Image (cartoon, rainbow, N blue to C red; front, side):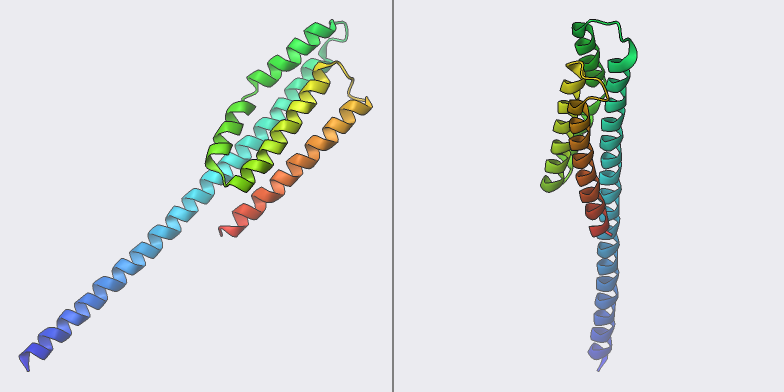
Length: 156
């Protein structure tokens, strides 16, 4: 009968250790998912903020000095775009986010480039060309933002 006590103790220990390991594994998975979600959130915010700042910088240089030649406006707008950091933010996002999200972010980036081209061409902010490019960019950013929200909520 002594072996029954020993077997019961061994079984109890195995159940206790197993349940502890299972709980630790579950906590580890939850913590890993939380960290990944937070990292994606930071990438999303950084990307959207950088796109916004790039647009603001391009607008500022495009409307700054009305007496500049077209070539100077073109160069200034393109330089504002190049130094904005949106290429770096885009590349980080494309590497780190799910494929569907990468597509939305790429659309927002490409719409910003179209907006850049309109501003670089010298179209004023009140022109139909600028307004249409701005609307297209706003739509693509709104689509990306909504997809980001969905992605972050899905992971909760």
